[in-house]
Length: 148
Image 1 (spheres, rainbow, N blue to C red):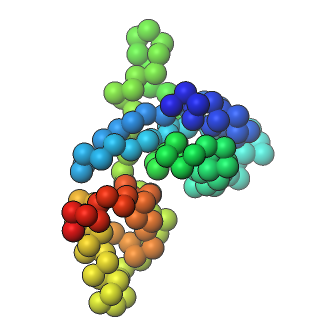
Image 2: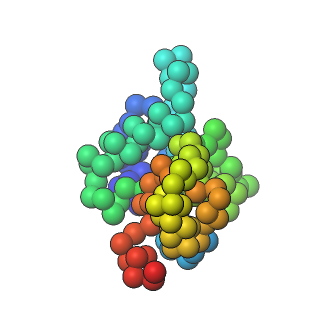
């Protein structure tokens, strides 16, 4: 995880980063990157989504796939313990559905069937799962298909 944090810290818009392994609701372990952006006048136009996209692209170029975090959470200030260290228990928990760009409802029976299957495999409510969502970004992997 130190190598992932190092690669993130090399990016111009990142002030600091922390990467943790966090189990999701289904018990699957996921890499979660907490990033604190470096603010400057030129950075003000960058949205969190822009920053996360840059992180994903750069890490994909520098690291093997299994080391690229599936989830990114932007932090304005690190929660600190009384000793001045990052309080990992006070960090926000990842919301897998927040990884979706925009919710798009199923438009036909095929899309509805896929949303139903993905929801069952991922342990998510199907009425909030977008047809444009990325199965892998939501925590999916090839071994989940064997459960269906």
